[in-house]
Length: 403
Image (tube, rainbow, N blue to C red):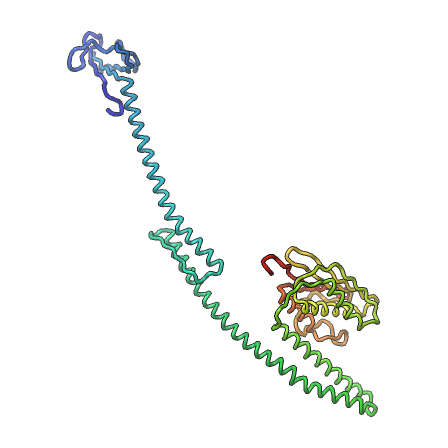
């Protein structure tokens, strides 16, 4: 055979070696001694060739069968067989690699499309078409189908949201116009009768005060005082409403200088008390100068007002530095407040103390919050009753990519 090689010789003979034949003619017998059942032997024939021989007794007879092969022919056949095995194995490996590449391509291509589509959706590109083609009905096909359905639903929801946003924007613009009309009405229509009430009250006091008893004088004083409060309330409401429409004009602000100027302006009207005001290191920031000045005026004036009943009022203005923002604070040793009501501090007309204790309309801190919100910052407060309060506001730091 091709595996065992060619050129083999077959001998048949009797056990005593007196007769041997190659099935064609009598021969002298194999060149190795056959006097018993032999294991395979290797030997050199008369021509110097290497041979391999084997003898086997035929059962129930006195005859032997012997065969010999050329070692070279055996090795040649085996080597040829191994060569074909190697070629066939290499061919199978190449076919396997190609098949694996085809299968991998069929799997990774739709996965890459799914990944690309998911990235586009995550970046907000909901209107982009998602193209995923999977030709066979397997898990990838089901995944692609489910993804397409999800993408279509997201796009539909996004369109509905856009329509709602547009509708709400139109409604908001209408409300803003109505608010502007209301502000105009407040600034003109309400001010006119209020001025009249205040004017006539002053005239009544000046011309007829000597004819009024103590109760009448008290009533006239209350009318004048409440008219002034009403005027201040109207001014505060107008300032609060106008702030929402005002655009930010940001520039670099020297907070150290700004805080010093605010303190000097506020204290020049209150020279009776000896306020101990400490202004710490305040790093500069980039914001709307006018708005931030108003924040400091409101916070510092509150600190002065609520610590005014102390024998030694103390106020500290300082800052804390963080990676993404700078925190500024105004701290006083005044009457403080109960932290259970801290959430009410920054609402419009929210007051934790009566008008008799401390004057004010309850708009100042609401104005502070609105200004800081416009700057993408935060505002909060901490306090203890009869110990003092600290009001904080943060402003984001300027980065290379803006705020």
